[in-house]
Amino acid sequence: MKNTDTRAAGIPPLPDAVLELRDAAVAVGGRRLWGGVNLTVRPGEFVAVLGPNGVGKSTMIKVLLGTLPAAAGQVRVLGARPGGAGDQIGYLPQRRNFDGSLRIRGVDIVRLGLDGDRWGVPLPFASRLSPRHRAAETRVREVVELVGASSYADRPIGECSGGEQQRLLIAQALVRRPRLLLLDEPLDSLDLPNQAGVAALIHRICRHEDVAVVMVAHDVNPILSYLDRVVYIVAGGAASGPAEEVITSETLTRLYGTPVEVLKAADGRLVVVGGPEAPALHSDRHHSDHGHAHAAAAASPRGFGS
Amino acid sequence: MFQDSYMLTALVAGTGIALACGLVGYFLVLRAQVFTGDALSHVAFTGALAALAFGIDLRVGLFAGCVLVAVLFGALGRRGRADDVVIGNVFAWILGLGVFFMTLYTTNQSGSGDGGNQTVQVLFGSILGLSSSMAVTALAIGLAVSLVLLLIARPLLFATLDESVAAARGVPVRLLGYGFLVLIGVTAGEATQAVGSMLLLGLLAAPAGTALLLTDRPYLGLALSAGLAVADIWIGLLLTHLVPRAPTSFWIMTVAAVTYAAAVAYSRSARAKRRAPDKPADPAESATSKEAAA
Image (cartoon, rainbow over all chains, first blue to last red; front, side):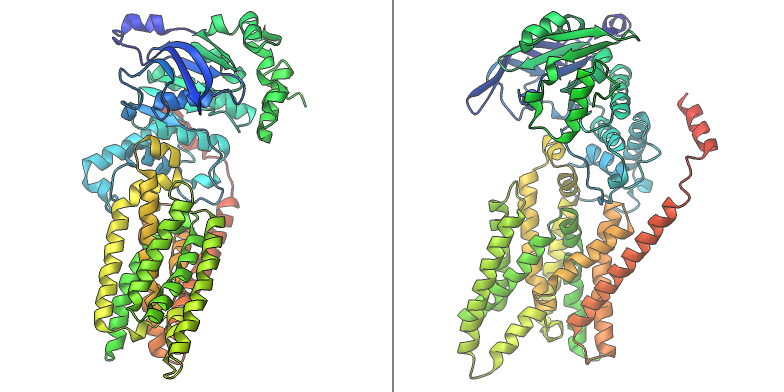
């Protein structure tokens, strides 16, 4: 699972980490949401930011993007201050789906990730005349192929399913060949097979394209087998480190202050049961979260408890 | 048809106005801001009648009113985007103000009997009554609006479809929102002179809605929307020439509405056709793509 060391033998390791947080803390409106987070992420590592809803997981992404300053500690992103290396970061915000009536093709949404910040409009037939446009189109096709969206990328995005839209948006975040991918709840509002599919896709990109991934999630089970590092945030505390050290019954029980068990399923995968999705904490969330809560409570990532 | 000079001036002014309406309208529909356009067309009415009541150039009132209120919408809404409740409130009050100016103006003009006539022109347009200098101004303003819109089109599209990602990429989302509202304001002020404040929405929303039904490529849709708006005006003018008993505004709106209805019918039948076979992907094709991947 942790193949960063073996790979480092083949390719000379980068002198500096993709991401470095030292004793970082965040406050919003004077209220300290979390603190004491230490984290080092190297290229090609898959990191999850976990915790119950409302503890400020998404603020971690905002700090890394540079839109929210850290209240304490040091934060370095790609060797620069947060916000200083925006070109090399792919960002997928937490979102609801595109409107069903939106008639814009998926490839156009992906293309905006490449050159959407340029002024003007592409000239008619530009792709036939200019090598730059041809290269851009090739890159868009390439990244659409990478996420497995070729069969529906030319359909209006409003007609695509939630899982298809999410794959296209991951392609959009990847199209500029970023070194760091920040994903805010990319599995939210997907059904279980799609959660598994998108999680596997992100893992594959992370390994094959050598992109470091920081993913915010409130349900750890779909990504548990892929994780290199974990940051667990709960109100008043945080824990971070290699996945196998943090995701243990003892650490999680201590963090949540309620019994949490990490079990081994029949196929050898780990499953987290209990605390993380305490019903009182997610009562303010929309309906799609019930699935996660029950899945966790039923001690199986695949079965719905209800 | 061009023996009458008023027809030529109408064509010149109409083309400029239609280009601006088609381009601005495309984003108006895509951003779900049609209500903003509707509200601004009524602001145009108030602005024009305020100018008439105070005895200044009608166009000063039109542009000042539309642009100021457009910016006000942005300031009251979020992130340079007006919200519907804000628009509803401002719009109702402004329309009330318009009625006040109308009363003021028509009572002052009651001797000449011109007041009611002018009011009707503001409401329903008078594209055939434009002077040649007004027509050239209309063309210039229309082209200027079109040029600015084309310059901001790509980042505006990004900000429209994917606001937070665009903002993270450094696209000035808020500024673009305001800029676009100003463009709507200028377009509304200009188009009111041709088709009137009541009918302006038809020229803003119908060609754009038609284009969005006919293509899912954004830049092609933008061009198509502008082209359809120009065609609506040209065909409307031709029909006025052939059947002069009906007013131009009626013909332009009829053409726009019929085109839109045809596009709805076309897209429904095209979608039904696409759904009907509903075969899984061609096995031969998916096999080759797997080979390519391997």
